[in-house]
Image 1 (cartoon, one colour):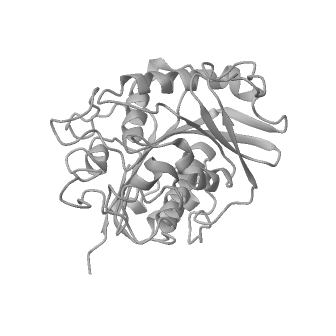
Image 2: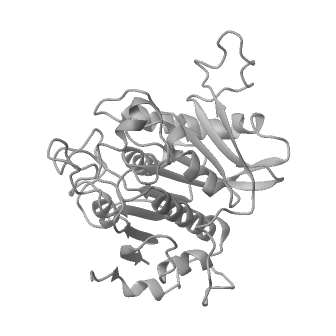
Length: 333
């Protein structure tokens, strides 16, 4: 049996947000939360008013959005979620609904439909979307659903994970401050020395100058080839291991055994792009367990660093991993 790699610092909670329940706790973050959720698609300022449709919002967003929110009344923290390379934001609907059901508003921009090797425009789009939140988001939400813009997290998958790190490193570029950063199987290119522009990894340990808590989630199968014709979807040298090595504390790190790079997507991803998500990467037996773990881990992390309650995150670190088995758990103080 493979040995679980778990750092001793996991049991030291000195620098984690305080909680009245960090003793033995059973976490429910891997199940749907108490809130009913609704998905809302919003077109961008360049495409928001085609013929025979409803009028555009007063302040249209710079990019098309998928907004997932609770239906019930309340003030909720926000998470900006960035999709992976050549994927649609709608492919993450089930994951984002899981997160929103625990009391979060999730904003998922469609950064592009076609993209090359340079992600500079994606970083600019994240900045523009983040700056838009304070002036435009409230026009799109029901009056009883209020965003708490002082509690803002940023997450991204694959190339979106790289873009999330790059955006967080450009601290002066946004008018709002991110307090939590999450990389879901982030990828910085094809290989070390073949990073996409602009490169994020420097290969200097703990060199990321981030003034926020970080969580990196990796897939155990992502670094393996699906077949000889295609490279791995999350190659060694530019994947989750390398991102975590450059993080400073507080930083959490989980690697999920026996699941692949795209196993957090919806069960049914339609169209040609949707079908390719089953063919290009080495996958686990099903997507639901990986998706539930990632959704739960994001909820636990956001509750810890945006809500001040670390009980669920500590429960995950101490072995309550819901539907999956972890091969690596680490925490940097």
